[in-house]
Each structure stands twice: as structure tokens, then as C-alpha cells.
Image 1: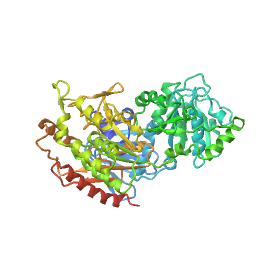
Image 2 (image 1 turned 90 degrees about the horizontal axis):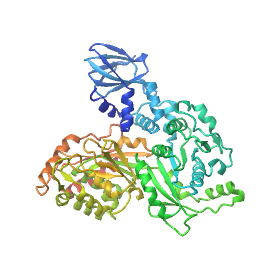
Image 3 (image 1 turned 45 degrees about the vertical axis):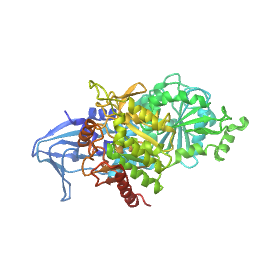
Image 4 (image 1 turned 120 degrees about the horizontal axis):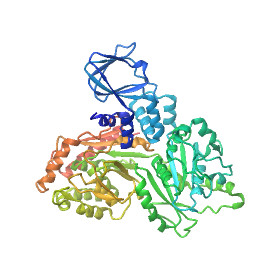
Length: 605
């Protein structure tokens, strides 16, 4: 049925999901029809219902309240919630419902840990009472950390052990050994190696079985052997159910990961929140870019860690971290390791894990996105830290210029220069309109002028961007060439030619694809802010800009308005502007004034 996919995407509880997860939800759903006047007693079924079309009313037992349900409304059972929509449903018109069996939804969460996390946080944000299990997931807020190396003998397992020991000093932590060979974590911790889980299938991963294989180092630190010592490759799909089962108990989950099994590596990366890629020498880092850029697809934070045991002459690393040579005494290895960790030897690394993170989602916008410059200025002046920016389209250009500018004065100058009609006329390279109207070459040169050869993961505040692949698959980039990502964010398909990144053609996807604030709820970010710009209508551009491009932007405005707005977040910063002309100075000034007021109202302690 047409529209089902779109209905699922707009259910507030599932707005954070990926394309493949939406496809799975559509697969497990079934459709029922209710004739006008027909009643449905939902107190006798364990299902979640979503209205596709029609009008219904629900009467609550023992209460005089009546609620009316239209397209997109949902009722019935909610996993991990104590709130049950019980009562009698009456169809006021012929209606069509989408039905999810609760057992199928739980299975879905078992197979997609990040979908579970996003769902539980969405459920809480909406205000539903949480079940004990749901409250446990919210309380633990598990952060998944991966320590990875593409080569043996890099010190990866030693770093995993150090991170685990340090984190466990304050919070319950578990380290999962996902390396097949080399130094075992169990040996480092002087524990007997338990049998690997690699032979087990997804359906065999019961809580009792998994917990029975966990080896405790102490009351706050545990180990679990996934595949060390096994001659059989692990089924990567076993990992999400494992996280589903242990996330209620552990605040930090650390993967010790090697390059031996690429399928396992890719799955661990997918499930991770933070990735620490360990290497021996500075020149080795570039070799990691290809693997990282092709596999990190959901906004994960990547840090590159140089092991100084192999590079003692390197005192610092641009955009990276240093793992100091611990100079351990082999005669009392574990005892000495504990002393080093307690002494703060890896505090700089662990600080990046423990730090509370705040994200700012800037709605995907066009020329009116210059108003975000006023917001960013106000946030900096009020010393509001932002650890992750998430945006697309021209909004991403604003974020990029902010992070690439040395101060606010230079930032505003760069906004004026980059958003001027003269600049756009200079980078709109017209081609014969067979597949596209504009080439990307001049835009790519422009992006190179402002970003050079910088990579986005090197920035302390991470500029994350959502792009659309040639197979219409959404991807969230948190690593890669700043130049390429800025370019792609400005390419509106099909009018603009796409750009190839890692062998795949990408464009902004705008206006069909837009960032959603709820997508950040599936990450480990602690606080999510959302901002959008509202104007009285389409901002009028001067006649100095190419007429076709001006008319094209106007057509996009009507398609996209409000599509990216958050339906559940309370920290929304909406910039309502009276401006009608595209006057950059006036827009920035007005938006900064509005932003100052919003920050005092919503972000002040």
C-alpha cells in the first residue's frame, strides 16, 4: 500500500530509525480495515496500532475522556512502557490501521540495539511512564566504545584493558574480546579464558547463557569472550542481542577489535558510539582512513591513537590522541598496570569517553540558513559548548564556516562572502541538461578554498552531515574529507551533479532527505538541541543571482517546510524572523538577538 513507508517514518517513536530498519518494520507490520461504526476492543490484544487513514475515537475505561485518532496516531501496547492504551475504539469513518505485534517489535529491538536506544529515549521524551526494563536502559545509558587496530602488536588490547580499568573505577564496565588471536584480555587480567561465543546463533543468546559466560574481574569490571581462541568466525548478528541483554547492567561496553574478520569489524563499528583506532607511527594513520570512511556510517566519534611505545619522538598529534608508553614491569604486570591507570596515565583518553556530550541539530535549509550564524554567535558568547553539530544542505555550510573561522568576526565575513549572490553565480557551472543542470566542479573548488585538506573527525566539535547515496540510502558522515562533504551538502539532486565519495555518488538529498533531531537519540549524545528558521515566506533574492537557480530554490522552499522539525524534543530553538529580503547582515543581527533570548529562556541553569 502506498504511503505505509512514510507513515512508519513519521511515527514519533520510530523517527530515529535507518532505512533498513524502516524496511524491517514495514515487513513485520500488517494492515487491517475497520468499517464505519465498527468497534475494536484493544484491551484483549498485545499490539501497537497506527492509523493510516480514517477517523476513530477511543473511550478510556472509567473515564469520561474521549480522544480522536487520525492519520499517524498510535495506540495499544508500547514496549518498555507502563502506559497502556486500553479502551474501546470506534471507527467514525472507514479506517485503515497498521498493526505491529509486540513480540515482533521486541525481536526488532533485539536485532537493532541502536533502534532500541532511540526508541526508549523517544518514549521517555514524549512522557510515557517507563517499565522497569525501560527505566534500566535509560539509567545505564550505555556507551559503546571500540578499540581497534588494523595491525597486530599495536597495543590495542593493552589500551582496551587500561580504558576498562579506568572506567570501572566509577562505573560498571565490561570488555568484549572480539579479537581471534594475539594477546588475550583474559591474560592481561590474569583470568582463565572462557569459551568463545562464536559458535552461537542469535536465537541461542539468552540472558542466562550470556551472563553465565561473563567473567568478573571485580565488582565493577567484567570480561566476555566473543571469539578469542575460536577457529570459527562469529556471526556478527549475535552482537546486537548481546548488547540488548547487557546494556541494562553496564554503563560502558568496550570492544577489543582486530582487523582479522572484516564482517565482524563492520558490525562492531555499526554498534559503536566511539572508535579509538590505534597505530604505531604517524605515517600509519592515513592507511586507516579508507577503512574508517567506508564503514563508519552513523555519526560515530572516531579518535586516532598513536602508541608512543613505537613513536617516543612524537610529543603531540594533530587531531589525535597519544597512548603513553607505560613502561610496565613484566614481573608484576597486572599490578603495575593498575598503578599506572590509577596514576592517570590514560586520563586524556578516558576523559573523551566520560565527557557529557551536547548536540545541536540545525534543520536542513537553504539561503535562510544564514540565520544560524546568529545562533552560533550567541551560543559562543554565552559559552554554551556544542560537541556535535548535525545538519545538511546549506545549513552544513554555515556550520563548516563557523568551525573553520578563527573568531566570530572572521566567521561573519566568511558568511557574507560565501552566501553572496556573486559567489553563487561564480560556482553555478551550467552543463547540458541531460541528467543534471549544474556540474559540481566549481563548488568542489570553492569547498577546497575554505576547507583545504582537513578531515572532520579532527575537530573537537564534530561537524556531522547527512547525505544521500546514489541508491537513495541515507548516510550520516562523521569522518572524511571536509572538502568533499561540504561539496555534497550543496548538491541538490537531480539538478546538481553528484560527487563520488569512497566509490559512491552522493548529494545532499535535499529536500526529500532532511536531518531529523530524533536521529541523534540513537547515539550516545546526552543532550540534543534542535534549531530551525521560520520566515514570513520565501526570502527574496536580488536579480544578481542566476534566475533559474532563484526560482529553483523557491520551489524547494514549498516542498521542505517543516519536514525536519522535531516532534518530541523540548529544547527547540526556533528563530522566527520578520525579514523578507535576503539581507545577510540584517538576518544575522536579528537571529542573534532572538537567539540570546532563547538561550536565556531554555538553556540557562
